[in-house]
Image (cartoon, rainbow, N blue to C red):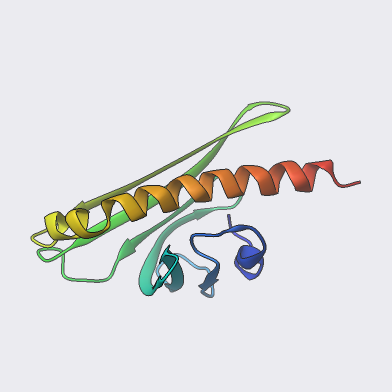
Length: 127
């Protein structure tokens, strides 16, 4: 989750991210919302714990739209890790965002989970 330079190798929803990767720094994401719709989102990194946690939040006025994305990895045993993610949106624009993009976002988040799982399994299988 924290190797931004290799996102294009495995992440079909967010194939490109740029940041100097420090808490408080900007994170520029290039998002493939749909086959024919790409967007760019600039967020602020709120937490980084390598191999455990990555989170960011929107940069818009909180009354208009505040979103926070949290992604976590938790070891279950020596061979299994649980990935969880959640995104919350509040503010006057949140219902509009949900109406316009809820399905796309859910599809994208599901893709990230599948892509990350496949990447981890492929990486572990390599000698």
